[in-house]
Length: 364
Image (cartoon, rainbow, N blue to C red):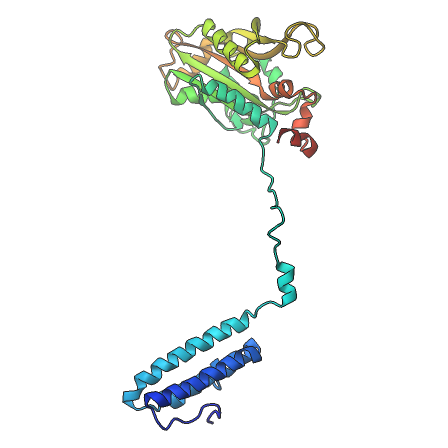
């Protein structure tokens, strides 16, 4: 059945075609705002009763061969017009009320987006690392889940050694079938990275190792089962204890000020010999004696020593260049939380891990 909206064309000259297609364009422009989008689509683009389908059937197919090109060109223009009108009808413009609701007052000040800040532990760790980076040390990293061999045995803690009791650790369960040295645990210090580094590269080595460590300690004001360390290792020919003292004295002055003094006391660590504890003059009273330094004028801060030849012997199994008769070195380690507590006047180590924004906002 012929659609009454499409008149029959009796002439196919340019003028007749212009008048016929202009009439349809005007009708499409009138229908677009008057009809809903779906009704407009059905009326003009429907497969069975759409007006464009009728135009194609009645005008294009009925045109003589010499007029088909002219009819086809005008039909294409009409089709593009209808598609454009349908797209506009589908996304009908918002009402005035909607526009007012979405309006932006460009005179208002912009919304300030808060930027993140380093956690005080991360900030302190980065400060320590930067001091040693300036001395030519590279940064070493390693896994937090370690084997007994790397965490203890290669660091001169043989099985049954009483020094293991001071580093009581958290062991991964269900490893009874593994050999003792292959059993997994949460590392108690970042020292395993020293051995892993020596196994991978010959001397000279100068690395500083920041990272998280775990010990089975009861939580109190100054202890936590999770904390952070920065350790260092320097290995080369003719490294002496004087090199160790000079390096740590410079590092303490860089961290706490040029007026800080250091002193060394004999100590014991299985992986260094000789070993020493390092104290710095109290940064709160200048060494005069106060409550924070227990009236002594000194604060114990870290441990250090010359690398034990037994540790080099373990490294030499994979890197023969670590012959303890030809090389020497020193190592040191410090707790990041302890230094952060001193720098920022924090009395409870648990404050670092509580996630209290009132505490953390002090460091933004």
